Amino acid sequence: MDSPTFIMSHVVISAIAIISGVAVIHGLVSANRISRWTLLFLVTTTATSVTGFFFHRDQLLPSHIVGAVALAVLALTCLALYGFRLRGIWRAVYIVGAVLSLWFNVFVLIAQAFLKVPSLHVLAPRGSEPPFAIAQCIALVVFIILGVRASRRFHPEH
Image (cartoon, rainbow, N blue to C red; front, side, top):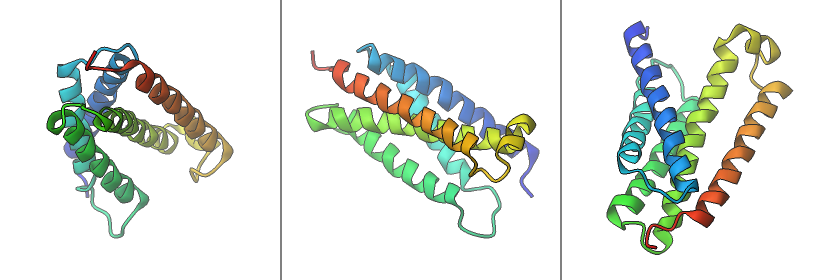
C-alpha cells in the first residue's frame, strides 16, 4: 500500500512542478528565460516522473509509459539547455521539451482531477467520456499555442 506521506509528497512536488512550469513558459513566451524557475521546474518535473514509478502497481500502466516518455523529453530538454546552451537547433529542442514537459504534468493533473474530484468523476467515470476528452483537447490546444508563441519570441542569443 502506498503511504499517505509518499502520496502527499508526490502531489506537492507535482504542484511545484506545474507552478514553476507556468512561470518558465511565461518567460519563454515573453522572451525572458528565468534561470531559477527553470531549474526548479526541471528538478521537480523530473522528481514527479521518477516518484510516479514508486507507486505499487502489479502491471505496466499508461502512466508508466507517460513517465518514461516524460523522462526522455526532460533529458533532451536539460541537454539542450545545459549541454548545448540553446545554440542552433537546441533552442527549439528546449522550447518543445519545456512545453511538452509541462503539458505532461497538466495532462496527468486533468486525469487525476477526473478520477478524484467527485463532480468531475461523475462526468467521466472511465476517463474516456467526452468531458474528459474535451478537457484534454483544450489543454493540448493551449500548449500548442504557447509552444508556437515561445518559438517565435524566445531567442536567448539576441
